[in-house]
Length: 143
Image (cartoon, rainbow, N blue to C red):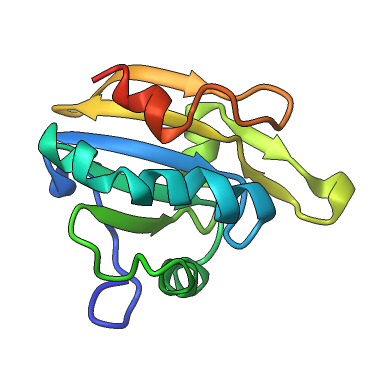
């Protein structure tokens, strides 16, 4: 959201080094209680390494905006919440999670990536719904 309205955002517009924290859904338990809050808690560490953190989910921009506010992350410098409303990014990356068995449709698999100068230099994709390799501390160890 930019000035209260949905807007297109390119990772390149965010900076030369972007950490992507991708989650299956805003307001879901692991995403809201552990995954994104871990990045929020370590935001100064990421900023000290010249990184911007982008939390991304297959949700609409209004949901992502409300989620950022609910986490106390709205307006935090160095952290943005991005919507992949149609799941196009998840699809292009080959990281679609089919959660239709739970009534959630197609989502994005949980992962973390480091993107430097437009190139993915590190990618950690979670298997089986856990949170074992894409936490903030896991990504910080890669920088």
